[in-house]
Length: 107
Image (cartoon, rainbow, N blue to C red):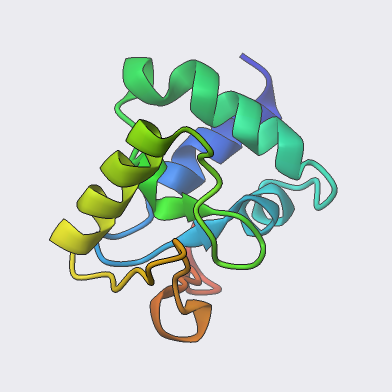
């Protein structure tokens, strides 16, 4: 596994319940700020096998990236179960729910 991929997995695993991060934010913390699409690929390919909390990752605007109605509803259900308020348009207030690891964090 590539170091970037390992770092992305570690960052996603560290997102606490009730918080979210963006694809770009994760890419930047993993060392490649322009690799948001690669974060999407990691999530799609490895969420199940690595037990990743995929539902806590959003696009840069705080919107749910899933376009499939069933997947979107599943993501909304997971987030709301953790106390995250999701608008009818699938938007989350990043000012309230975005997670920023502490500077001394190993991720």
